[in-house]
Image (cartoon, rainbow, N blue to C red; front, side, top):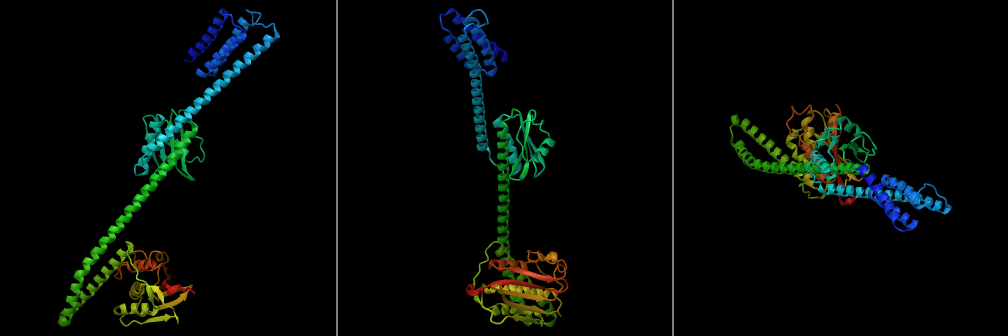
Length: 474
């Protein structure tokens, strides 16, 4: 093909020279015609063909049209100047024309690549997870850019994903190595090219393409588009999982709430029947009826905890805040644990002149009650328990202290998690592990803080804060 173009270029110049030898024209016309022919050759076929045509045109112009005709010499200095001007003009024009042609071709190639990249962007449909999205991306790249094959190393799962029948030249080792390159130009090595795929400073993997290849700039653009596409797919997958988890939690909370209410109805009947039977039972039956009564109370408490936990998790814990004295919250909690105390003394240390707090009295009372129940259940009967209330940093801080075995340091961060029970007591004392989680939910619903301070073999103090009524923080 190249040889044919060279032959055609020489034939065109020779034809022009031959025609003008037969026609009565001046040298200027011959020179201009030859220049136009050289420009055409450069535009159509390229610089090499135009240069060869320029050499032949100069020789022909000198031999046939400049005196002495028939010799490759020049007698008249003016003709020498004209000859040199023609030579320079022919070579320069052919180079300029070839350069313009090359730049036009490059611009057209960039236009086509841009159109292909735009088509690639438009055709991408996220498949739901990064692996499927990468496969779809590779298929689209091969389809839009005409590559024989493509491969992708996905760092997160350490997978190599391929498409196209001829992706083998891009080895697994080369792809893994390319993922660690921070700055890659996208230049081809042989008939394939690899490029890291990065999102900011984070490496997602690497991309490999098999010839025919896009330009180095387009390879980088494809790699950047791959990074954005993969990250979007990953974010969508995480959002989908989060939404599924949220829906699952809502469903579970609704089921627990419904189940707890269904349990409380028969428990109420059982409790009423046992209470009546206890009043009339003979001595030999009283022990069994007392067990039934106590277990009914325990099941009723469990159902109440399940309902409370379900409402907290579903975000349906509705507060009825009002101004309430701290003494009312503490005394109400003490009254509720009266049955568990069994004569055990509980000291009250409340600072004088404490202002009222802004809280839901029943729920705040439930927090103190939970602290007291834990202290009564998990500490020896001969150890003291104390309830304190004081004002600190514009908040009312209520605490329940005991002299029990204390809590291990690694368990303090878990103690308020639902269903968590301390390692030493989970098999020794009855409980569900929901009490402190409910207390935490109540306190956080008030926008306040709950925490524990403890030392091994010295005891524990559970605290929570409440806002001063009327916003008087000082």
